[in-house]
Structures are given as structure tokens and as C-alpha cells.
Image (cartoon, rainbow, N blue to C red; front, side, top):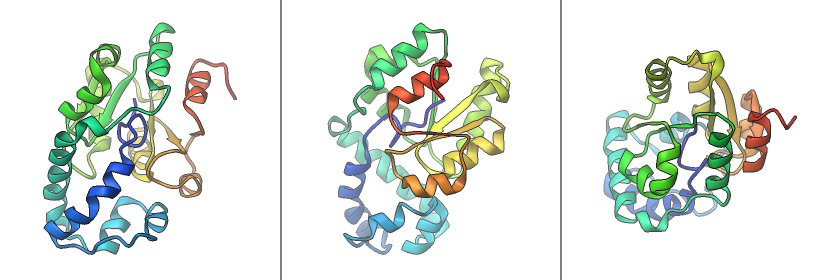
Length: 206
């Protein structure tokens, strides 16, 4: 199971561009230009506290971000090699799925028809703490034991969600959270490039 933003889709540059306008609209502290590297060390809850975002605003801000991305969806691209990775996994009998807090429509547009057909299921939608529930729903629907699944994401909360469900927790070093911060959280697997994911899942890597 893959996270989407920061794992398969290179959406962080877009996010940093719109964040100032979002902060002004929802009246939380704007992020200084040199502050992004600090925020990339923190988990989602710590970022919200640092920026002064009350809990009741979180779903509204998340919905606003999804709408904005839908408007700018042509600017969001998959990381190079995602299509080859998904094709390789499917050709070798694995069943990729997606669990993301982004809107399903955004995910489907960026993936495109071909990759959407390769992904067996998608659990998408609102909620900053809902990834564990999305993983559980995917496992139940497909009658997969947690010990037979892996969740691959780019954030500290992705690692936490995988552990709550009991699936293998994997992290990628090219997304939102900094590689050092991910390493401190101690994921079961830490990937440095997309090819390494395929090699490891297919038993050809370390």
C-alpha cells in the first residue's frame, strides 16, 4: 500500500507555493522561507502546534488544500519511475493499493487511466489521523493479513499508522519528512529510490 503525496506524486513544491495563501485565509502563522527544513523534522501534530492551527480548523484547511490541488492538478506529476515500479510489481504478482488523505479524484487524475487499472484499490479522503483506518479497510476488503502487507509513505505519521495496524512500516527518503527524522522513527524499511522498492519487495534487494 502506497501513500500518494510525497511518495508517488511530487506535490511538495506545489504545497510550499500555496501555503502562504492558505495561512492568510485560515489565519495561522505563515511559514518563513528558511523554516521548511525545520518543519520537515516534525510530525504533523507538532507542525500544527508550531503554526498555531487549532484542531477544529484542520479538516477545513485539508479540504481547502484538496480543492486547490484539484484546480492546479496539471502541475502535479508523478516521480520519475513510478509507472515502471507499479508495472513491475503487478507483473510479478503483487497487488498495489493507495491509502491517502488526498481526494480520490486528484489521485486518479495524476495516476492516469493505465496506472489506475494497475492499482487494485484506493482509500482516499479527509482526516489527519485517519490513515490507520484506511489501511484497516483495505485489508478487510481484500482479506489480507497485516503480516502480508506493507505501507510505504513519506511522513512520520505514515510509519505510525502502519504500526497501529500491524503492517510493515516503510518510508521513502524523497518526500515531506526529512530522511534523518524518518530514520529516528525507526521504520522497518527505508528506501532511497524507487528501484529499491521493487528490488526489496520482489526479494532481489537487501
